[in-house]
Length: 74
Image: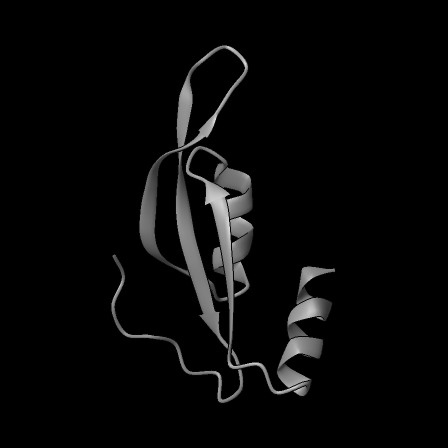
């Protein structure tokens, strides 16, 4: 489904797609990387759980259009 959303966004002229994902969510991160997203930053203690613990989140982006990716990872 996300691939369809990205395809439609590209056809509509969007230049990039961005998302946040909890750093410990390895299956989601693997999926996003497979779809061409790259990690560009970390939001420390971005989410607080009911037990009082915190989790970091990654900011990820994918360039749309020409298919080119940004050259640097953070």
